Length: 67
Image: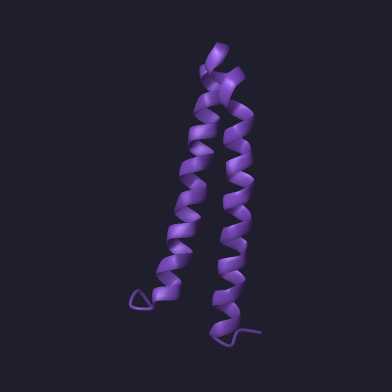
């Protein structure tokens, strides 16, 4: 399974969502001017990354013949 390039793409997409989510939570936790400037942007990036990850996961399921 780890030799499958599409599976590796799924893993990368999910890890990207995780990293963006952690950065966003860290920004919220920092508070102050940093949170005011970057919190909404980080969560917007998270939503976009999640949409891409879901699309890649669905593509993986479709290409591998899942029901």
